[in-house]
Length: 435
Image (cartoon, rainbow, N blue to C red):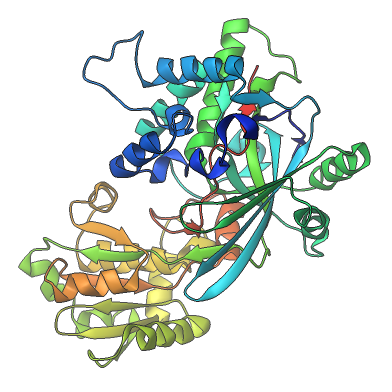
C-alpha cells in the first residue's frame, strides 16, 4: 500500500531570519492579492516569494514568477537563509487553534509519499481538479524542483497508535510558531532509525485519502511523467517519484471540517417560483422555521435534523425552511450515476435536487459561479439575504470526514465546495527537494 518515507527537508535557519512567523504563509490557493502583498512586505525572506510570486506586466518566458522563485530559492540556500537537513527524518507537525469558542489540537506527520496513479487505489481522491491551478503549480515545480507546501492526507488508525507516537514529541518540539491568526504550530524532526522503521511499516498497510491538495498531487504526477520522459528512465528511489504530505489520523479530534454555505443570486423569476414549499415537498420533508430565530438556534436545529437524515436549510427574504430528505427524494437520488456514498451527501442533495432539478441550473452554472458563491460563515450568509445581496441562502452542516472517505473508497468525486478543513497547513515550515 502506501510507501511513506522520511525526507531531508529544507528549512529556514532561525539565526538568519529571526521570527519564523514572519516568513510562513498559507498555501497558494487561499492567498488573496491583499494577503500576497502583506506577506511580501512582512519580510524579505517570506516564503510567498516561492509559493506565490508576484506577476508583473513586463514578465517574459525568462523572467517571471516561476524563474524568480527558482532564483530566490537558490540565493537563499547559498546565503544560508534555507538549509537542508543532513539526516533523513519524518516531522511531527501539530497545530493548536480555536474555533467558535472551542480549542483543538491536530496532529500530523510530514513525510514524502511515493506517487501512485488514482487507478492504483493507494492514494484516493474525492474531488475533481481544474486545469488552471495545475498548470500554475506545474510551472513552479519545473522551475524549482521543490514542494513548498504539503498535500494534506488522511489515514485510518482505529487504535490511535500513530497519533500517540507523534504526540510524544510535541512537548519537546524543536520549532514553535504562533502565526498571524494566533494559531500555534509545533514541528519536531523524528530521526531515530527504529521509529522511522516503525512509521514506514505502519503506513505500508494503509491507503491514504487526500483531504486537501488534489491539484498539488496531480501536478506531482504530471511532473513525474515529464521527468521520466526527459530522462527516458526513472529509478524507483528518484525524488521525482515522491510528493510531500502531512498525514493525519482520520479520527484525530483536531480534524475540523467547516460547512460551506451556498448563496444564490441573479436567479430569474421562474427559478424563484420553483423554490416553494409545494415543490420542495416532492423530495423533502419541509418544516417552516421562524424567520426571527437567531443563527445559533437555526444551526442547532439543522444539526439535530442532520443526525436523523440528510438535511439543510433554505432561506429567502420571506421564508426559512428546514428540509430533510424523504423517501421520494432518496429514490430520486438513487437514480443518479453516482455511488450510494455520494447520494447521501447533503451537498449532493442540494446540487442535484435543488440547484439542478428545481432551479434549472446546469453543472457548468454551478461550477463557473454566475449564480453562486460560497461562505463558511453563517452570519455572512444570512446578512447577504438581509442586505439583498443574495436571493437564496442554503445553510449546510459540515460534511463528516468519514463521508469524504466513503466517497473516495467508491471512486467517486464530491460536488464542488463540499469540504473545508480548518485551519490550512503552513507553507514554509518544511520544503521537499525533488532532486
